[in-house]
Image (tube, rainbow, N blue to C red; front, side, top):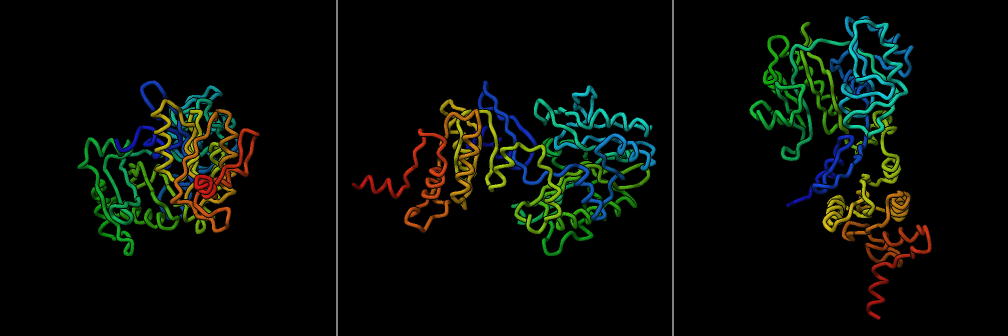
Length: 410
């Protein structure tokens, strides 16, 4: 088996969803709180699309009930949708500790929006993707509710196989695209984008046609597709996923919901976008680890993993599990780690009350080699970094590989 359930779940955690459960075997279950490089609320993604000329619902954002009520009145819409803004899916079926059921509410009466918002703001919403205690709602989005005649799926993402961006679409939207790909693969359409040319007009029209848009809507959908690609480039995205990309009875093509993933390596170019990042719902340990450029995912075990390299980190989690233990975390120091980062990583691990032991498993081949006499080899940085942190007499400064080799030769 190439990778165990544990390593697969950690790998998934590094790429996206807010929280997942990994099954180490039939009887044990560990909760993975995944690391997300940039967290944007739904209204923030919609704002970015709006700025690029993409058609979205009219909306306002409020952080108190009176403002939510005024926003509903300003919309002057036939129907209004009120959405709690948290970084988790399943909001519609969630439950507030105020007693209100559902984080998404539709109403034709603007006057009730304030009352609904008063039962959302300041209260915790629990969904299938949040912790058991839920997540406190600090903002709500008040938007114009539009009828959807038909739902489609559209995404632009980076594809290694094509060495660049690819458009993926399906006339079956508003549902899990993986399910569509599994049961009806003929309904998945792809268009490879030339990174130098961009999306050609004929490509956009062909995708719009494959998505089922007809007549004037085909041209309108093609224009939306090209604007979404402009957004993709503008914000250095790795993925722009619209589900659903729908049409209304009034003859409009609208992006009703979207998820945008960003390239964290482009942060220096995207200061304004990254400044919008919401870290309030992230695990405090993960947030602290990110400050030191460490990749950390919390698990439910008691054996901490102090490792460099994502593959080795996942393998280490598997080894612990294989021998009946439970990993307490996934911690990847990376290849360019410095002594200060090692020190901070060790401090994070020892601060976790669940941790009873730390397994240090370092691959010297990817650690920056020190040039000073105390760092004649790769492991010197790791050993010296750990020796900086001495929580008690039971932890002695660790020797470097050079020192160990010298002792063996004597």
